[in-house]
Image 1 (cartoon, rainbow, N blue to C red):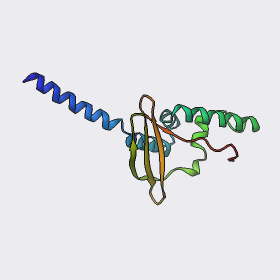
Image 2 (cartoon, helix red, strand yellow):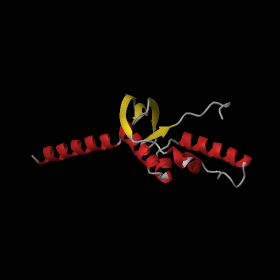
Image 3 (cartoon, rainbow, N blue to C red):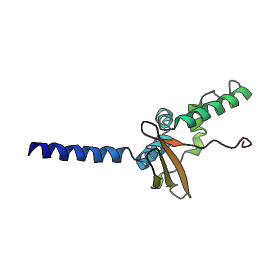
Image 4 (cartoon, rainbow, N blue to C red):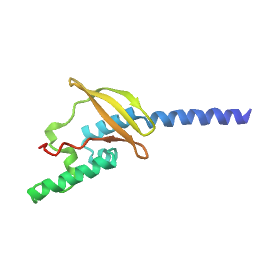
Length: 135
């Protein structure tokens, strides 16, 4: 009887862990960190390639305006305080594989948009690099 109880508890824990590690919850945590202007938490929830791209972009911008813009992707992440996102209306997982997921997210009163997440120890939001000619 005891081995059955251990198996049931283990399955329940695994089910909870997989829900907590879902792309939907990872994106919701990222959106919450952004709305609370928690740069450290939001930064942790970005993929490593997105962090590298933001750092490079921040250094390039800081090079053209020394002392005005810090050369840190984390500072660039939050940007203008007037652009605080609206609360999330919905997050829906459209596709999920072992290492990638696509969610559809919508803020209250805003359009739906697709967001890619990658698994790097946990789910991380991936922002695609802007085209070279983008401002």
